[in-house]
Image 1 (cartoon, helix red, strand yellow):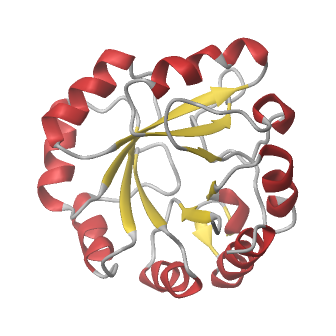
Image 2 (tube, rainbow, N blue to C red):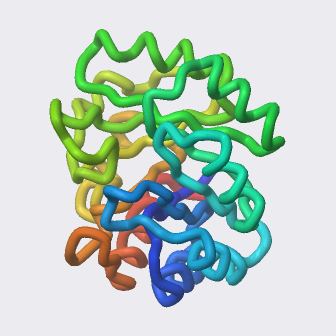
Length: 216
């Protein structure tokens, strides 16, 4: 099975188009004000409306309340919610039921002690995003361009499908896939020329490298 790629933090129509044309399986839109990739609801609705069927449109939120999520889900045509904050397993289950959308829960990894959370969230989420844990005091919970020790998740089997994230680029994604056995990968800062500014060439190169890592 070919590796499925998610391009996250998209903010411009040209870059959404580049991701779609290059074969992305998911496109992600960020709803988190401190992020340089943050979008307003109207802007996200416009971008998501141009994504063809078959490509999952994902909303990334961070500890969002029901009112905020009601506004996002009511206006943006979405296929999945990505929870990138400190949401509890109970909150994950609650949001799955409330919105009727699949939920991907991000789990930050820095060392072996963090692996237990993968099992816990894997029992309530539809998918997991296994990411590098942000450094203490970091303004953003993800998109920091940091990697973790991929050996920690090498060839592991979790309760639900998972996606590898954290510090991936077109130069290292094939090695990350080889070491971990991941069949889904996520990238944001690794295809940017500046924080929050995607590069169409880097998007295409990343997707090509990821898809070439494992023959279809």
